[in-house]
View 1 (cartoon, rainbow, N blue to C red):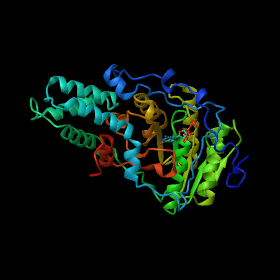
View 2 (tube, rainbow, N blue to C red):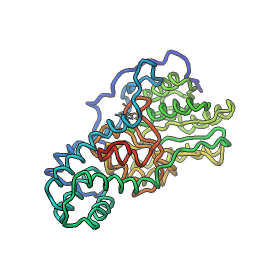
View 3 (cartoon, helix red, strand yellow):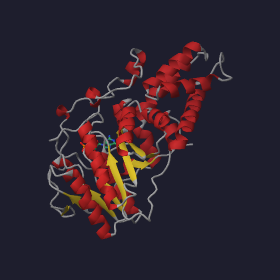
View 4 (spheres, rainbow, N blue to C red):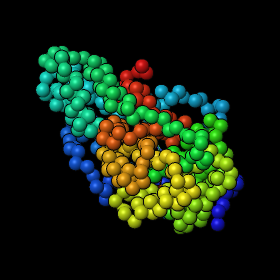
Length: 382
Ligand SMILES: Nc1nc2c(ncn2[C@@H]2O[C@H](COP(=O)(O)OP(=O)(O)OP(=O)(O)O)[C@@H](O)[C@H]2O)c(=O)[nH]1
């Protein structure tokens, strides 16, 4: 049965926390990349706890949903400040590391190697780290160099890597509905991102509909309904355990009938190495295409920054199976290794549409290369 989840009685489970005791590191049973992981000074600097992402469990209670619509008495922080605060764990580690490396030391083979290690520990990836250090040494080798200069070069090189992928998600008004399919591993932040996107599109005056395609978890359906209620957006849902492809069919029909501009479809979190679940995703896509051969018009892969280099493998597999058209990276505030975005961007070349630096509705914004690069290395807005 199709239910429109706009009505009031949706607060069951609201405000409860996902049970931290039930989760295990996301990377546990996933194919990891062979990026070298260093120990010692840099390990201590970067904590070594990242990779402990939060895969959701099937019976996890609903995640807390922050107020979707900020009330006037909530002082609204500028996005730059949110970004800077969100990336502070990475930027303070990088900044401290650079200062310790380059105070009263020349730019020589040792310092360059140590800088490369520092960048790898921040998850920028081996290739990017090597390219940046090579660039830094040009014309400066054997000379004194101030930490500020190193930071400026870092920001410049990171910006260069990111500029080609910093692309907005363009909603084609000719596609009605413009179907956005949201995919990713468990707990990456898909449902939360959908809620934030719904609020954004509504603020732009678009008619939005949500589809609770994560039929696996009752809590996920409830969570999406709450976001729907808060953002004033109808939610198409079926009961827990229902066929996800059937739900996609219902949602396509309902969105067409209602003349909706944007239909955002949630999907169950799935590990990229679980083939039967990946096959289910392909089925959902086939059903969407029956409704509109050009759909889904965007397939957003939500990546949790705290999963580190495993994000690279997620991009590969979801890209192959679901035809990912763009990325959203969440939880950049929860890691000292925010450089993972640079690594993923450099390797995949996929557009990065949005980044998330917190749980609030305003903590997701379109991705801007320069702002990100400067905030990542602890420089001011430039
Ligand atoms: N700190 C932080 N937390 C976030 C961010 N985005 C999402 N979260 C939190 O991450 C947790 C998981 O988010 P969900 O939206 O439920 O993730 P999901 O991918 O839908 O999860 P499944 O339905 O289990 O696949 C929630 O507690 C969110 O509030 C972010 O940018 N920063």
